[in-house]
Length: 352
Ligand SMILES: Cc1cc2ncn([C@H]3O[C@H](COP(=O)(O)O)[C@@H](O)[C@H]3O)c2cc1C
Ligand SMILES: O=C(O)c1cccnc1
Image 1 (cartoon, protein in one colour):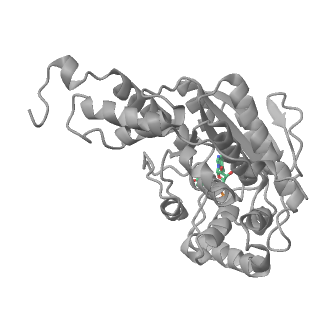
Image 2 (tube, rainbow, N blue to C red):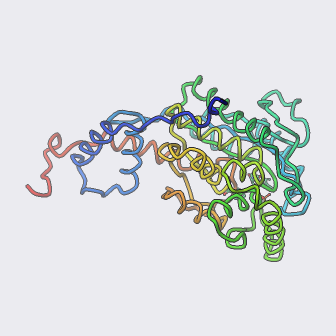
Image 3 (tube, rainbow, N blue to C red):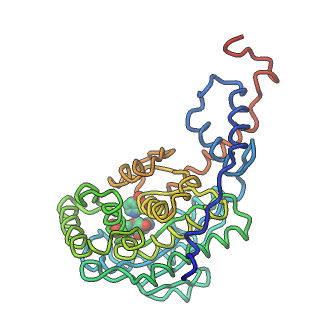
């Protein structure tokens, strides 16, 4: 008998005792019950994930997974495929939006080549983990083989191991891959059991005609591959990108290690949905940073029963929405841990 794969191993269980203690504490803080809204919920979730009444966050970690997509050859992006590798260099040199955000929030930052078409080996800052130089064009063939998909999942697992070795207390995954809104929309179509035209959007900035063409191409690809997409792993293998599979593997590994995850936009959320379909225990460990302007995101978030913290009209990826939401998590922890109680401050309670 084959041993079970690592990604099926148990995830950690959030602490119900810590949740109860944090809920009790929150009821005593000097504010009307519920008045801090989602910040209260975030503090409670983090308490249950960290197993203590008063959670803190000090060491955020960001891994950006970069990979190319064969379907980019069909002109489904507003930008050329070469931008993937060019942006990897930009990440390595600290010039991308996520690099600025990482510095602002004091996050450790790495970029991982999990499948960029050209070599990134000349950039010493880039973690070399290339599964293959880009996926196949899913208009013609499955994006990857199952072995490649498993290898990409393991690239995410290895990133979480580096985060843990660093002492990270929250994991942010990001992605870079021209064409990956196509891959993500196709995957979401399968996971949401809907029509691709309901989900497809402009990505980097297609015009209306471009979006219609993208939907039509993806609809063809989904017809071609329908028989392969009946299992979560089959769908991920057939329609995914290497960076999406790596994010998926990272989310599973984080949940197994008890490391909270802050999820980014559409592409990251599709990877999170794939992770939850592969392993339902992942969901407890996910916090959702923002709702992207890419139209499919709101649907994917609803499927995950997620309430994102921010809605800023961002549609970048790279982990940027998650990194932007991180300061709110810190504020939630500070409020929860530092506010006075009704008793300590001598403030009358509601029923007094
Ligand atoms: C300069 C530049 C920087 C980016 N950073 C993230 N993306 C984002 O855009 C891509 C997905 O959109 P589509 O499917 O339309 O290609 C991904 O690489 C994503 O991370 C970028 C895109 C560009 C052009
Ligand atoms: O929401 C995202 O992750 C996103 C949207 C558009 C382009 N790239 C990423």
